[in-house]
Image (cartoon, rainbow, N blue to C red; front, top):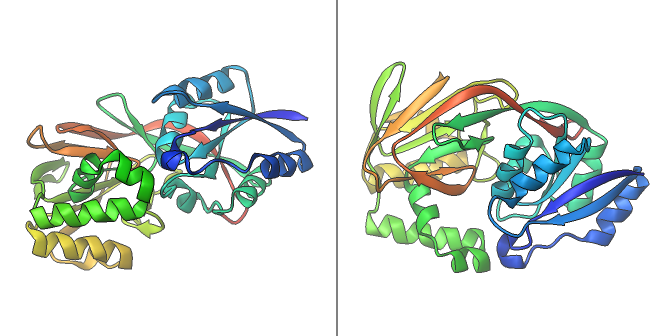
Length: 294
């Protein structure tokens, strides 16, 4: 049997989300694979483990966790032949929605091993970070940086929702500048999409193609709760692009500037503070996609 290392984030969802190892090992064995469990021990460790898997020429490396762990793993697989197989075990696992990966872990494993490997474009920031899904600045990044880790671990999406209510009631809404080829936008929200999905199955940047280098930038240039809260809910309904003050355009690069207290998020995790520049690149990460998936 071929060895298939599987990186596990043991603190994903506060340690309440651990893989069903026996079921997964049985399913993998039926397809000629032997799972090896590699646990992370610190932030950034998934990158090291993924790079080791690539250096050892493993054809596939699995990841049990959420989008933050997928992001770390992708950094270790940039431009490598080793393909990424994701097992949704995080709070949201947006990448699973993007690629059409089932939520059930056994079905996720089977469908990807029976699917195909595709080269997914990876975008970068000027801080040396990589993102597969999105970079955003707005109420979402403020919520993610302020939500207590204990609340997120215990309640998952509900905890994030509670923090969202707190931030909206406080009126803690950022204001910043977005610089594109077409000029400058005074924004309250900006989503830089390398892929379509955001916050789950919601297509915030529907024109983004994760298998082709390039970004889609969606901005809201109206300010205050009466503009931001409806935009937030409109994303879930898929009607946000029709709202007043919303613009979208393709881009190869975008700069976001503003107070150094304004945070940004990458692939669903807090990643730093403004200013930051995002660029499309020719770097790729090979991902396994189920037949009939993305």
